[in-house]
Length: 227
Ligand code: CA
Image 1 (tube, rainbow, N blue to C red):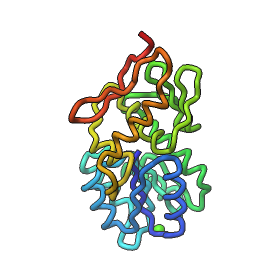
Image 2: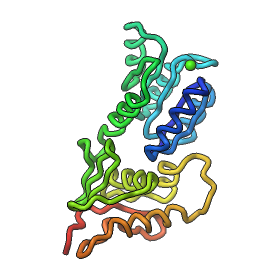
Image 3: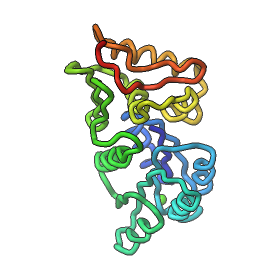
Image 4: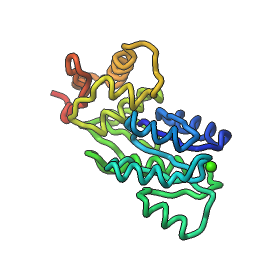
């Protein structure tokens, strides 16, 4: 998934970027309200982690900007303030969840997972597509009874496709959500990773679950059980 982290504490920012990247997310990190406002206009995010106390203003105004613009992206607010009125104010401007500093990274990671699980088309903590199951919390994938070891990037790619079961995912979308804003490596990187993913998911007698949509991208198909 593609995340925007708005945090002016550079130490904390680094820890969060590293942790979230290890879970396979593509993270854009900005430290000011101005940069964040611009990022959400230019890019499409799956989740925003938003510090309230920023050097050039209050993070809540970014949340308001998103909601006023009709953007339903989940927002997890971070703040050093612990008073009830601050929490209420945060939720009132449209934050989905709230975490008070200091916090332990595992708690943030769990809340991020919970917010990303909120369904668009797929519900439940375990994503399923035919005989493929993906557990976002445990970072595990099975085909039937067999556990499939994937790299963080392959995992993130499969996660994205499975959350959009049956929909065509364009190469550009995959690049944007699974890699990051500044990716400028090989242009066929998506195809290379899809090829590896297919190879790993391949089991005797079973169909390829990932359909190539020529000239556009890829689609995870609904039914790919054995013929
Ligand atoms: Ca701050």
